[in-house]
Image (tube, rainbow, N blue to C red):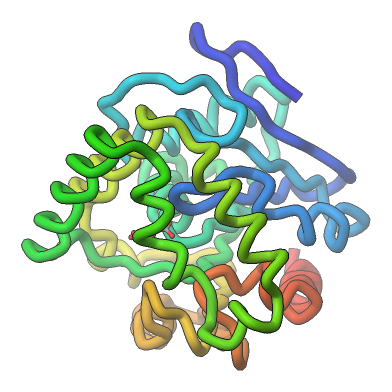
Length: 263
Ligand code: MLT
């Protein structure tokens, strides 16, 4: 589905009814990364999957983007869909950075958080330099070059041999991202605020889900989140990498279904 919002067009899917459950994809992916969650969770909640601006089928808006802009886009989508009830927000990786921004700006719209393969800290100086290099690469060499540089870290090492079709699907998703979207998201990740100070003030249910074999954001970051967020739950999925929701969909959905009972 596609709607006009604040002068641009956002694509999204929605299925099911009940508690709004928004899934926010990572970089440089799209709502299609949540396919196993639509099928496995739409009987338990009102699942909503946006394509962030510049990604998937949403308009390839030029920058600047920020985590706040992306968070506002998700809240605007909720408004356009007539959702006033607080939503459970599940963000994966960059989607987690957006979830933190949503909580920071719109806490009363949030029922709880599922933080997947993500981390709270802002970018280190080294990380900022790497973002600069990636921005130049995206502008000069296009989206394939970014996809090539990231694909080997998206999954647990064993997944490349055991699920080659999945790896191919994700590669296609990555190269479908616009240059504007990649550059905008890289700038937003470079400049993202440090969410660490807010962690002790999150007083809503939080589930942290991370892949034991995440090669992009090590599982240690999930343990740190768990230690800092009062009452949070932590599940580390064995033999799963950065895209744990795709690599281990049965286990991932099972943990979310269990968590949904708290609402
Ligand atoms: C993502 O998977 O969303 C990004 O790779 C996260 C990041 O680069 O920090």
